[in-house]
Image (tube, rainbow, N blue to C red):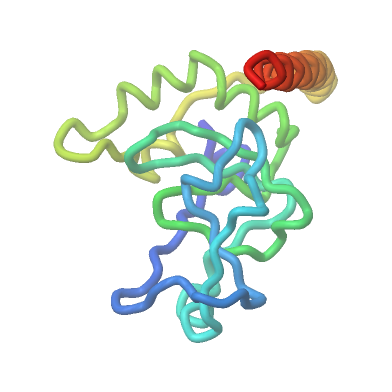
Length: 187
């Protein structure tokens, strides 16, 4: 069970009557819409006031945590990077932290797999907005091979991720060239 290899903790809603800060503060807040492909898009985070942060200060992410969306969009995953250490987390996400006998990146890939995504689909609430209960996540069954196998899988998957990112960069470059040529064509 996941709860045997890490802690699964919830995020926290901004208290009733409170809103996001209209001005930048030292306190940021991660929402599901801030989640990227593998990492949170930190340049788009909203700010909360010191008063709001004081009320939800126990619900912060740490470097290396994994977050999962648990309301609306279910099962989207991100790894928390060091620049997000101490940022508050929405109630629409839970986080995996305090890892034991498991490589956090290995867990990220396992959670991304069809094995867990099927468990998520089967565990979601059927009425209204889909949700995923914290207790159900804690009880998901995952394969946990010895550390060397975990590290090997992470190495292979990281290499594939890097190759995909490189190919996307080339594709973006071609799109820019095409756009520039089309603009010149009709001038």
